[in-house]
Amino acid sequence: MRQGPCGHGRLHELGNACYAWVAHEAGWGYSNAGLIVGESSSLLVDTLFDLNLTAAMLAEMASVTRDSPISTVVNTHANGDHYFGNQLLGHAEIIASVNAAAHMSQSDVESLRADLQAPGVHGDNVRRLFGGFDFDGITITPPTRTFEGEIRLDIGGVEVHCITVGPAHTDGDIIVYVPSARTVYAGDLLFIGATPVAWAGPISGWVKACDRILDLDVETVVPGHGPVTDKAGVQETQAYLAYVERAATECFNQGRPFEEAVAGIPLGRFGVWSEPGRLVQNVANVYQHLDPAFPRLSHIDVMKRMGDFEADFVPEES
Image (cartoon, rainbow, N blue to C red; front, side, top):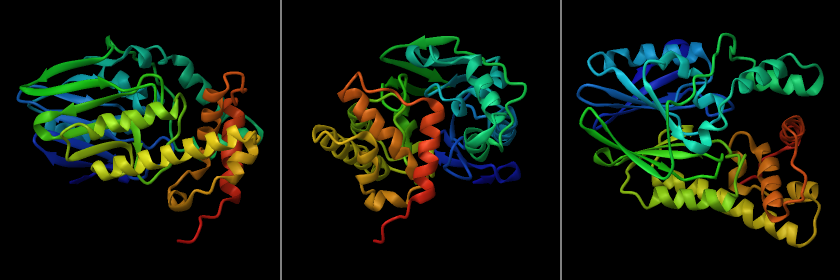
């Protein structure tokens, strides 16, 4: 295990050609990545939120990839903390699902830059969460290859499966599976130690995506955020999602207003995870899928509501 520059992350050797770059925290924007090293080439699973973080990670990986340079990048989905660093790998083939590629845009960077300069509560929230990142100089570098379903790659003699499992966290989620290593890179289908957030859903689809991982012959699971885990970590994430979907559906069927539902759903053991306020978006997601006429929360509104929730939140005593 290697300590990353400035403590931003660590490179973990998982064995059987697989590595994981694990960020020093599981919170907003601090994402993990993966590395699969073959005899003559390597595959990088995801880049990071800004160029500085991505460059530091690549520098840490250099001793491992010296004889097997990175020839392929796979983006697990279209959140910026998993693809903004693509331009530093512009020489490589970049792969993503069709749906993920459709959501990768320069406007993602520009809207974040604008939000960081915004006045008032919204700007304060964005600066609190993302003020430590540098979005200057980022030119979105989209995938050069897209796919639907599943594709299989040969990375220097290592067989790698890229499998679409969304919509779940986003419209275009995929997992990267290395059968010989019994290892899967799950992207943001997994937040270990942090609350998952359903931007696309339905949450029932995310529960099924967890089943897809659990059905694989896997020992090691690399999440999008948080420490490396195993199937128990997948099951715990799945338990949270199923619980929130059941509770929110019950509230909806009882005719309870959305705000009342959010306030009334106890988080129990899940309340110790970071970012508990993501419950706001998760309940909204359930209501939206049960009633297509239910208004979607604006980005500004959902961030404010999450912040308000966390300001007043007290975890239950076990």
